[in-house]
Length: 353
Image 1 (cartoon, rainbow, N blue to C red):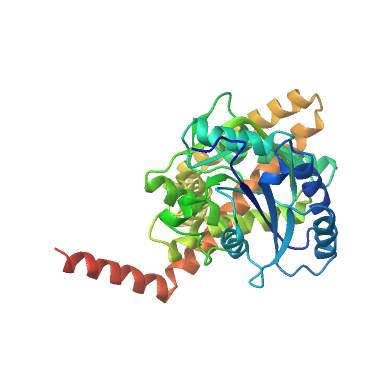
Image 2: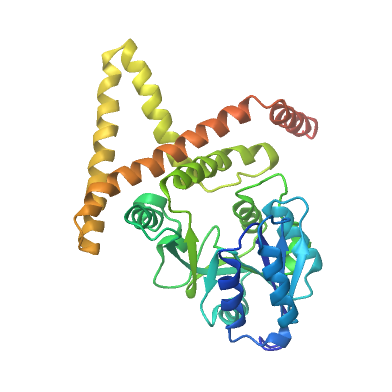
């Protein structure tokens, strides 16, 4: 068996219109302590319209291990699958263009992948604001807090290695793609979650390692925050149309349940006042919890103004995500393809009895 130093590593970076972030991303990879003669960096670009391609080509001229590959489909899962098809390494690491990585990121990924006999490892994603404003920082706080994102360990952190459903990016043994297939190209979003749940279902081991660290620059203006939440909520539900397994973990469905309860009980309260009381109870419990965690954040940051804005940011995160999930649900149940696939599955089960 090869030692960690002998293993060849392929890094795949899906990329499109990342002129602001791709230089910092590539610089952090170049600064990594992993041996460059055992490394290739495949930037799979979705035909960027800004100067991203020019920048990557300049890096490729200077560093022989960096390569630009076209992704005419322009979607992330296609970029990943294209990168995997070109990859020469025994180990594949997915990296994000709008992130940068600590000096030992690559070597730690490879080290822990084999030390713990895992199939995929990842680490702590420290979220930073693209817009260094008061609102931008508040948005980042919500995306890094358990009340905001639940038990998303790679966002909230942990003190020691633990088994998880998914990780940010991910460091995989290439052989796993031969075993369970590639990323689902029907899923413009959530494809990493679906793949990792498929990996876990096949008996694979996904491990979170806290001292593998990267810095992710999140969309942090309010309009983009709302748009991204709605999109994420939609793709927490809609992928069910294209996959045989539950493509996300149950925590992703909580905003859908929350918004559905609020909408349903509000409508029923018009018919009968008896439904007003459970509606009021849910609303009050959520409000009190929101206020409590907002106060804790203000105390941590030693700025009272965060107590004034965090409740609003948390509400935006949860409600907009839930609304997006409702849209996804209605698109799903009105899809003839979805019902045909379910009827076909039922027919196959009955015929096999």
